[in-house]
Amino acid sequence: MAAISASLSFPALSQSSKISNSTTPPYLPLASVSAISRKISRHSLTSSSRASTSSSSKLTIHCMSSVTDVPPVSETKSNFLKAYKRPIPSIYNTVLQELIVQQHLMRYKKTYRYDPVFALGFVTVYDQLMDGYPSDTDRDSIFQAYVQALNEDPSQYRTDAQKMEEWARSQTSASLVDFSSKDGEVESILKDISERAGSKDSFSYSRFFAVGLFRLLELAGATDPTVLDKLCASLNINKKSVDRDLDVYRNLLSKLVQAKELLKEYVEREKKKRGERAAESQKANESISKSLGDNSLSFLV
Image 1 (tube, helix red, strand yellow):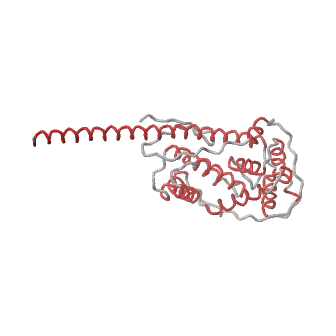
Image 2 (cartoon, helix red, strand yellow; image 1 turned 135 degrees about the horizontal axis):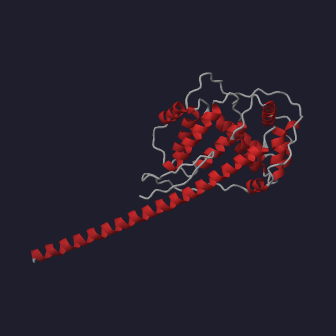
Image 3 (tube, helix red, strand yellow; image 1 turned 120 degrees about the vertical axis):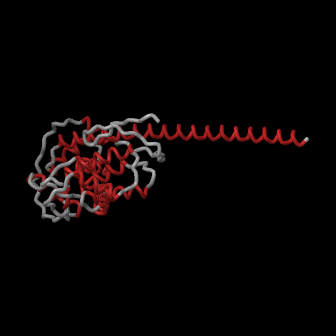
């Protein structure tokens, strides 16, 4: 069969993926990037940063245990393959392999510290990537194997992502950026991130964090580009980095949509060919049976 190639990169990596004959998933279109994404991308990347001077009580967030002996990337990939042994269609596997390498590098940086915004970003990317996967059960099993390969807790990722989503749905553009003046579990999480990001010593920015911020804005219905400016300033996050990484994220979604459209067309085309071949075979069998029947009658007469 002809190879269907798609450059799927997150972040900024490019590989071609081939769809195997065994790949026959039902297709579900990816959720499109909302109007906020388009407005943010048109907004100036040079908006001025305002430092947050709010004082808040310090929150101790549950973090993964620090690792003294950093495992090699090959070990993380091997752990993933051992935990999930079934074949993964290459249109999904290509990006998964890129992601796990990049996340391994993030995970074992000295300044890395797990936080729920990062978790929300990863869960969002994973769910978009695996949208339309042939089996919901396999999709969940792959998620478990992936996160465990990084020596982290998949249930914590899901729980924290859901908590952040529920909180964001109850917010407005104004309340979202005004977290420092409020009390609450998620507000305390954001205050802690702001303090750590401001100190530069115990915060490691990543693309998944940028996607997590975008998801918060999306769920809060914050379509004004200045809301992202204010949120980045309140969190002491570099807005240019966020803009750049959201562009990469949008690019990934666009590539996945294109690749899955090609996959859908291929599957439908192959299904049609199989149907035509089956019909031709049935017709030939009927002709042979009729011919044999006529000859038998002639012999008996």
